[in-house]
Length: 281
Ligand SMILES: O=C(O)CCC(=O)C(=O)O
Image (cartoon, rainbow, N blue to C red; front, side):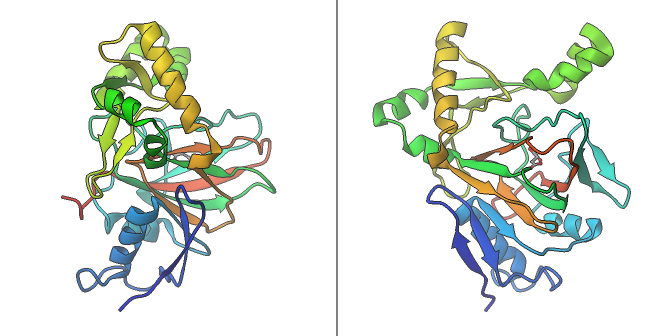
């Protein structure tokens, strides 16, 4: 029986795993394999961290493929020359890193990716941490009456301010095209995790534009209240990266925020996004 141990990082979420050797076969007897153990840890802790995971781009993609289909690539990011499934996130000098705000990935899609696996390649001398927030924890912190009211509501998601480069490059046509290409979606404000069944808050500062059926001022007040709550450290874990640190997050009930405090130093990360959860379907 495979044993990995998990050191819980905060009451809200996150665990650092030990006893994980990613050079060993990932798959094997159902329910007994390394991939199954990682999946179970992910469902329990929402974010799992493995140190010293010196994976090539191909092995990184292969790890992702044990969890589900790959391919939820961001339309603007470049991919690694050795694997189309590995996105390279590189920031340095006077760049403007685009993930320094709370978000779940791609909720402007009707079916956002299930998970992402991020590997640190080049880490700045200090800073460049990533914070994760548990949306279970945010939901649980709400008054039961508010939980009930919110469970009646849906909100619209789109690319929001992430369309700025499209506007700068292509004007209004670029702006419109970016919206059409990326799409938009409506999700319940209180969503339910497909595996645990637990309710979680599904709105983010990056991608939620308005609440269906409420006036803009009323909806904005509600969203601002939720965004403030998401911002509270009680719901967070902060991951400090070293080269070859690997973190996997369940994108369904978490958000993340990549702190952009390290420039002009260089930070390079490799990311594999897993679109579907094979074990949930
Ligand atoms: O670079 C990071 O730490 C996180 C990047 C990010 O937000 C993402 O991959 O969705």
